[in-house]
Amino acid sequence: MLVLERKSGESIIIQNGEDVIEIIVDKYNKGGVVKLIFNAPLKYVILRKELTSKQEKCCT
Image 1 (cartoon, rainbow, N blue to C red):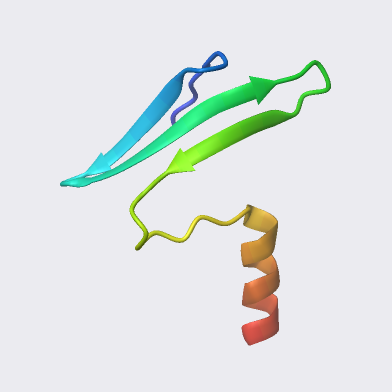
Image 2 (cartoon, rainbow, N blue to C red):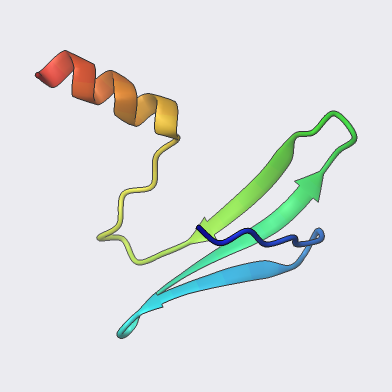
């Protein structure tokens, strides 16, 4: 596991070959909510974790 700290406007890059995913921290408020922006190739599906858990339960 990798833990990073980023400020608003800063980003993280995930790269595999030519595929690049950029995660940008847009806003962070004192209530602990973070707004993230994801730039990724269209072939990647990006979901909130709670949505993936619901899909696994419904389809098994």
